[in-house]
Image (cartoon, rainbow, N blue to C red; front, side, top):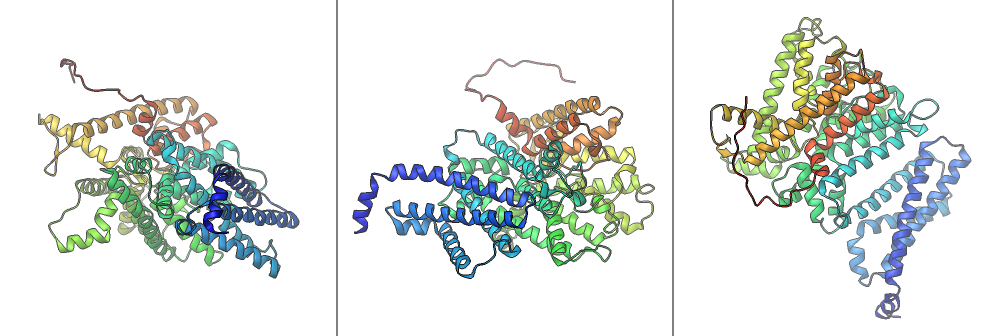
Length: 587
C-alpha cells in the first residue's frame, strides 16, 4: 500500500485519533508524575521499589506508542520527523532502554539505573509541559495574569514536594504552613526561613529548593518560552508579551531577542561563580565527598545569582566554618551584584556583540537604562558600605581588622538590597543601621532582574522628578533624554502602592506578633516585600497569621505591585476626553 492510499484510509479517523491522543498523553503524563513522586517522595521496601520501576518502564512504552501513532497520522512524515527531532531522539532512547533491559536483565532497583530513569522521565515530563506551553496563545488571559498564575502553580508544586517524607530529615512530613512558607520564599527568591535549611531537609529537599530558586528567579515563563522556541517553530505573541512585561523590554521584538540570551547568560554566570565559590570555601569547611562540595558550590551560586539568600549552612555565611572565608564572601557578593543588575543591562554591557561593537566604535555608549541601573546600584552599595562601616565598627565589626571590616561592610551593603546572606550576627545590630538597611531593602535591585524592592530605576526617577519639580522645570530630563510622563506616573504609583501595602502589613503584624518590637516587625516585613531574606530572628517565631502575612508580602514583592494591580483592575475603555483643569493645594 502506498503512502497516498494509507493517508486516505487514515484521514477520516484523524480528528478522533488526535483527540484520544491528547487525553492519552495528559493521562499518562499525570500518571508518570504521580509514580515518580511516590517512588522518590516516600520510603519503600526493595520489592515495592522494584514494582514501581517496572510501572515506569510500562509508561515508557506508552510514550513510544503515542509518538508512533502521531507519526502515522501525520501526512507529511519526513517533515514531522524533522520538526519533532528531539522527541524522536527521546523515543529511540526509550526503545534502546527496553531492549537493553530485556536482554541484559538490568535490575531496576540499582541506584545508577534509578538515577538514569528518573532523569530521563524528568526530561520527558518537562518536554510535555513545553508542548502544552506552546498553546498559551489560546488561553484568554492577560499576560500579567498568566505570569502571576505561573508563580502560584510553582509555589503549589513546591509546597507539595517539600511535604513529602523523603524531603525532610526524620519521620513524618513538613507541616503545611511551613512548607508553603518555604516554597514561597524559594520561588519568590526571598530567603526567609522558618526551619534550618541545612539540617532540616535531605538532599532531595535541597534539590527541590534549588529548582524552585532557579525557576522562581528567572520565572517559569522564561523557561517555557526558551524551550518552546528551541523545540518548536517560534513563539506566539502572548509569549512575547509576557516576556516584554517580565523583563521591561522596549518592544515585542526586543523581548523576543532577549529571552533567547537569558538562559545562556544565567547558566554561564552561575557556572563561572560556582567554580569561584568551589575554590574559595576555605580549609575549615568539611565536605563528605567531592559531589557534596560541587553541589554546595552550585547551590550557593544559583542562590546568590537569583538573589535568594538560601544557604546550606546553619546561620548562613555567619556559620563558624565560613565566617572568615572572605574570598568566598567576595565571590558571593559579585554573584549577587550580577543577578541584581538585570538581564537587559548584562546583555547591553557584557554581550559579545556589544563588546565587539564598542571596540570598533568607541563612541557607542551604554543604553540610558543601563547607566541608571549601574550608577544607582553603585551609589547605593557605596552608601550602604560606608554606613555599615561607621555605624557598626564598635559593634559587630569590633573584633575585625581594617580590611576585614571593609569586606564585611561591602558584603552586607550588597546583600542587604535583595540577597539575604549575612556574615554578622543580625540580632546584635544597632537601630541606626537597621533603619539604613530597611531603606536599602525597600529600594532593592534593578528592573528585569532577580531582585526585589521598588527597583533602582523607580527610586532614581522619583528623586530626579522631585528635584525637577523643586526647580520648577517643566520636563524631567536624564542624560539628554526626556522621561515621558507615563513613566513618572508609574514610578510614583509604584512607590505609593509599596508604602501603602507595607504600612498595612506592618500594622497587621503588630497585632499578630505583639511584643516583637516595632523595628523588628518593620525590618522583617520590608525584607519579605523586597524579597531580601534578612532577619533579626523574628521569622521562626511567627504565628500562623504572621506567616500568612509574610507569605503574601513575599509573593506580592516578587510578582510586582503594578503587575498585581493590572491583573485585578479593569482597563479604561477610552481616554478620548479631558475634563477642565482643577487646582488643589499641595504641601
